[in-house]
Amino acid sequence: MALEYRVVHLATLLGGIALLFTGVGSYPGSPKVFPHDALGISSIVVLSGYGVYLLAIRGVRLFDGLRKPVSDQKREAIAIFRNYTLGSPVPPEVRQRIARHNVPSSYASILLTISFVQLMISGVFLILLAPGSSLYGVMQQIHNYGVGLTALFVFLHLAAVSNVANRPLLRAVFTNGKVPLVWVKEHWGNLSRTEI
Image (cartoon, rainbow, N blue to C red; front, side, top):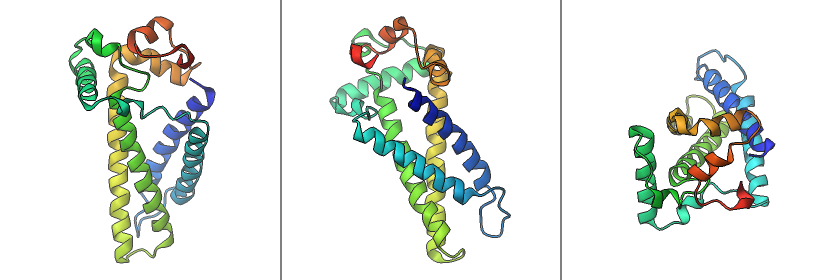
């Protein structure tokens, strides 16, 4: 894992926590705990900039799982969920086709993208609109839905890392970015040498 990937991961985690806690006091009539608006705009700039950077170098691999036939996507998703929830082994024929970003992570990424767009658009409108207007109330609801989808994404992330088998990947994100080659071969059967 590249250093910038790990830095953005950590910055997003810390920024998300800060936004959550500062957003609690950002309703009309409530005292602001911290400049939630400025933090939100900073997050938009950083995450949008990083997204454009990834698109420019064709480094976006999160949606690779969606290129598979729907029947394969379903088989992979069920096998991974059973592995996470029941500890059932992933069948060898499914494991062979799993890439670095598996099918559930591709769908979770779509969820995160939708929530980011909701939070970004509604957040900007909430800064510009007068509190109490009908459009302000609509944007506040959209913002709340975005927070809910983000919370669901975080829950799915926590479910994935709660699986002991994924701990080497979690350690890699927060340390040197490396996982043992044995772990890679076991978990990402469909991975070229250039992706390791």
